[in-house]
Length: 236
Length: 101
Image (tube, rainbow over all chains, first blue to last red; front, top):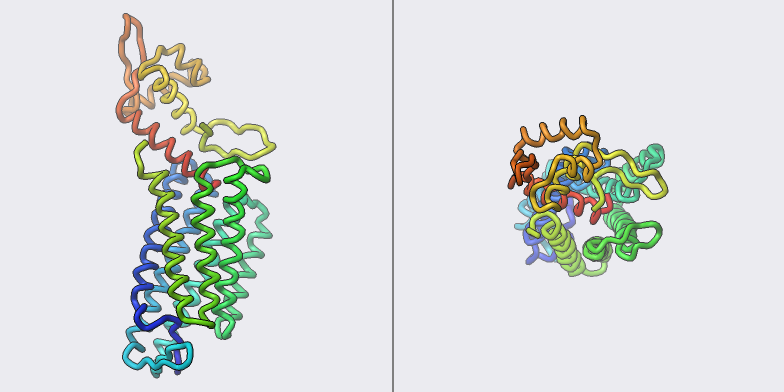
């Protein structure tokens, strides 16, 4: 059985540290949104909280999967073309990889979809359920396909584009959006996260796109952390 | 500052939530330099006499404001806890507005 590790060997584990930062930032936003919900009892606040919680749990699934995978193949890695191939025979590890990556993809996409619906104030339940169903079907049917990787990251990039567009409108006060001075920082953060997803799709061309994507993803979450710090932590 | 209630474009402004009323009362006291006469509070927070009494009792029980005397007249005084509550409320509104919630 063969598992493909889309990362340069020297980067093993470092991506896990980067993603741990993403987990912390997503959990902070989820927790504060829930605090908001506990005061307002507004459903959109709890959905926003659950969306970020989903993203955090998704990244945890990815970290655990990558760590277990890397620890099992790191001793037998070969460099073939653009990829490192790790050969191992334990079916359990393969199942863990498939389940972990599937969990990560589902939770990240549902999280982004949730953010998109909440900020755009969607109320059409049927459309929301249909979109969630489409994401579920798309993720499941591509699970064992070689297209799983690029399709997932392109979908994530598309959702991040729509989210970024909302903050662009909010920054400029366009399309009925109320002008908000913090929207620019959020536009930058989600824009960088979108660039990260696009970089992930290019990993098939060169492994260093994985490093670039991880660095961009870290930068995006650090930007979100800055917005969180500015709004919640900093004393005025 | 906007409230934590739902604000949608093209719709009538919704009723204030309990949290918004509490904020309006405490903010009115703060704007008056930390103490306010009962009639002024009623006017500034846009409340009936009965409703204001209920809220005042609740806020005093929670330690967000106290009763005091100024120039031989009864006044309501904002406590440190009330001040902190206002700061927390403003942060929540800012977070909500920034993320477009």
